[in-house]
Length: 117
Image 1 (cartoon, rainbow, N blue to C red):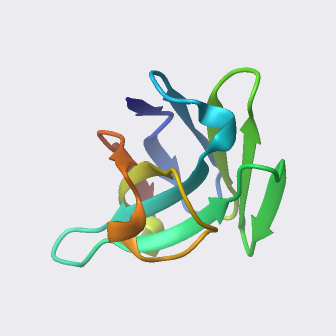
Image 2 (tube, one colour):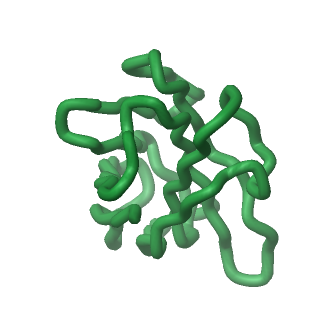
């Protein structure tokens, strides 16, 4: 089970840190990903991190994980209105990071991020 949190309303240029707490799985062996879905759009990949990597940067976003806390984070900086979406964390038990949502076995419930201009 994955529980995402940390979303909210922020002004453009601001920052947010999303968290995703995992339970019921051997978190340290899972590749983790963050996806997002804006109204009327398809779900898209944001960032991912392999089981044996602690931190990775993708542009304005940094994904990190704390295997001791069974938690993955998404630090989002310099947010833009187009970043507004529901953000989902996901876990896959096999394979490396990829942007294909169907390869992920478990999904969190989503957390809303709204960036105002």
